[in-house]
Length: 253
Image 1 (cartoon, rainbow, N blue to C red):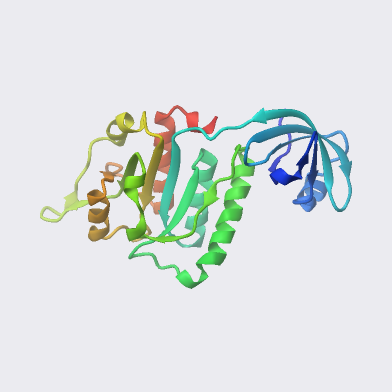
Image 2: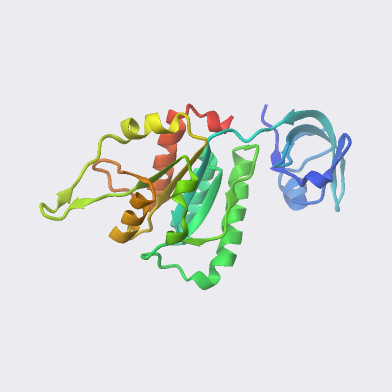
């Protein structure tokens, strides 16, 4: 049976009791929880709890801990550097990669990003809320973190055991696409022992050549999707899905 699931603050846990003061409207008016109901929660730190509701009022909900389960961050940790997209596309990229299991998302300003950077702090707050809702919806142990935005030339690819830059390229002389070997074959052997994986996805207009050159010089591995030219938000999800498949979903357990 599936029970309601959400995240709590670790300081709300005292002994075998949890006091919840956040999300009261959702718990009481949407989920309509009552005394005796079962609820699962994560403290986004060390434990996941299976609990029973013992008290409900307008200021707080009280939970009795029935089972305490240790949680761990499973390796490899996977980070998406997402060049900032238009509103709906960016939100889709965040929502779906969080559901698959991305550990962290870093918004990136590249040359062809058209979003106004003066409003970026408010956007990051909204993106974090979307990440939290998606983390809750798919019952992750940990909330996906949306990091502060960075300029593309401040992305440190060498910090990762392996870093990928998926993009489409063209032969300027023949004016046709250049296809790399199949993506499954090109990345499978490199990520099996990695403890950290990073990848960057370009904006709607793609990368500039100097940006691609910067990453190649930094040790990033260039890959593409064969003949497929995908939307940016689709590429973010598609690449992560392949990595997740190769890893055998172990990063989600």
